[in-house]
Amino acid sequence: MEHKTSHDSETAAHGQQVITACALIHKNFDGVEKIFLPKRAGTKKFLPGVYEIPGGHIDYGEDLVEGLKREIKEEFEVDIAVGEPFASFTYTNDVKGSHSVEVIYFATFLSPIEDIKIHPDDHSEFGWFTEAELEKVMTENKRGDDPEIQALKRAFELMSGSSLNFG
Image (cartoon, rainbow, N blue to C red):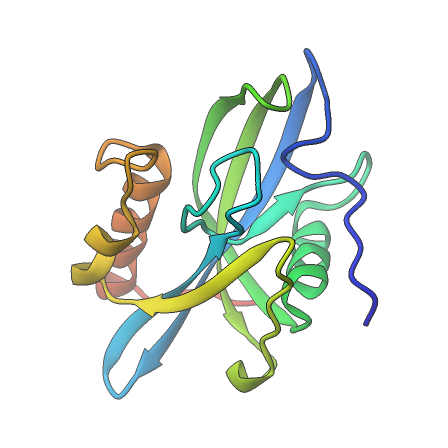
């Protein structure tokens, strides 16, 4: 599959509103729930070397879920099943000059996890993390009060206390 990105976190969008959809991809490993987090490439201008919830920008007129599936396919060459959205927040991207609205959905891989491909221009590595290991993904750019870290904590709370619906 050819890797393409029509726009990214570094393409100028001064004064624009950007919609981002992200997939909190989880899997049970021998009774232990873990989440998939890729690490942004060190060459990125926006949050280099930071673990993130995977996803990307939704094109004008594109359905959120279809756009999210497209982004995951472009970045990792695998397919996902998308469940319910469970968190949203906003942030400004000073590199891009934009204001983003991020919506996070529960998701699972449909493709075998062995098929995950990393594109070095996007990510340097990935890992599967338990709730107790979230400290490992926090950096000076992602503290405990960061909205994405808060969303990760909320995801684990929801996964431990409810059934998730996938479509």
